[in-house]
Image 1 (cartoon, rainbow, N blue to C red):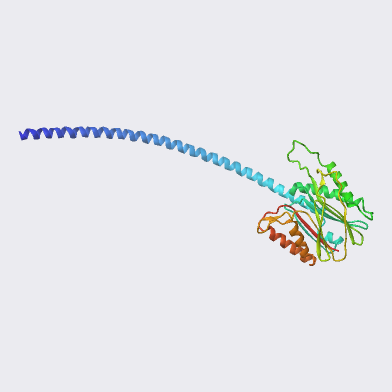
Image 2: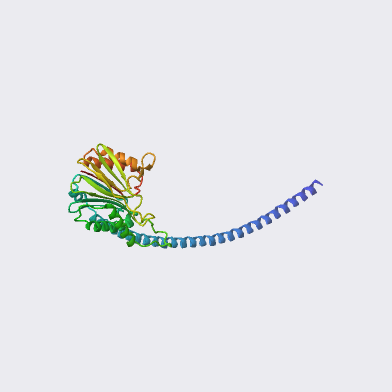
Length: 335
């Protein structure tokens, strides 16, 4: 009986192992087929990725060549533009008197002239007429190349107008500014309502000062400028008309001619608004007119070389790391 039971168990185990072997064989066969299929799919996928990578490489290489070509063209145009602007600077400088030329008329003087860009929207000139001496400092609309174009136009207009008074014993400075304004308005384009780039105030802010022969008196007119005179130990600010020489809502109003008596040792300062509007200092604020007036009052007793160096140091330290906001001009002369 026991023998029969063992026989049955042995047969059952044999059948079990045979079935397991058959099942494992099938699984291995299926696994091998799946592996081969996955391997084939992976190879196809790998080939597709390689093809895409090669395509992307070609695109990158082509774009790199395009960028190199554009960069080369840009460098060429930038160089040509820079050369052109430098040439424009030479032309502009040729019509603005240097310090030596200025000193021929006013030996005791200094000139601080610092454009924001290579070409300036500021200009100044000094003219010796038969019996009168004239100093002009002007700030044209804009700066850089556009401002530079306007300076050439305006300085030519100023000199042409002054030449008509060569033999005069006295000049009405307000009349000159009015005539310059009429000329500029007539010469510059009319406002185009469809052109948003049009500046309604195209023209210039200006200081026009005429010295008599003995240089004991000045007649002057100021358009959006201030004039500073140091005498008797104090600095005085003369305010100008709040309108430019050019198209403006007040263009039908007359300018005012002011006068001031001078004596030997007095200092006169001419400037555009570039210094007073410069952002800087510990609080990053404008230099402002009050601070400018104080600086001029402080340096006035010094000799001209020290005045220039002190003003330069003060302005430079005020700007510090800030960008220069506008063209800057400061001229000082001693009677």
